[in-house]
Amino acid sequence: MTQFIARLLSFLPGLLFLSVAYTWVTNPSKAANDLDMVYLEGLGRSTQIGDFSAFFISVSLFCIIGSIFKNISFLFSAIIILSSAAIMRIVSWQVYEAGFSGFSIGVEIISSIMILLSIILIKKNSKQNTITEVDEDIEES
Image (cartoon, rainbow, N blue to C red; front, side):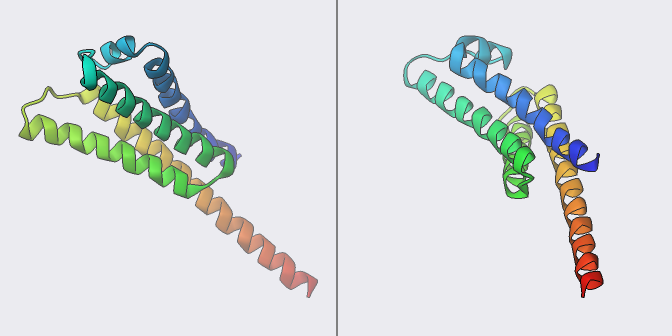
């Protein structure tokens, strides 16, 4: 049951970010609007679509692959990206007078915490399995 919860904790944010990635790929003007952004023109639009699509696709794949294969390296990658985004939102608000994006920061922090809990549960179960295997090896000897 613990493994199911561990996987679910990292899989759910992956699905959330995958749905946002899908919108960036299929309807970027709506995706920009959903994030309270102006849909840019020219090279700005190319950068906007490319960077945001890459961000959401990467985070979602890191979460989903990490969840399926219980690979904590992928899960840590998702945490690094999400935490960096939250930190840079705060920096842009404090240093560059951007609007405060509390909802987005909250989603990024809560998702990071969920993924971190997933990592903790995966590692805990991995240690328990290793101890059980060692005990079985000793009994067989």
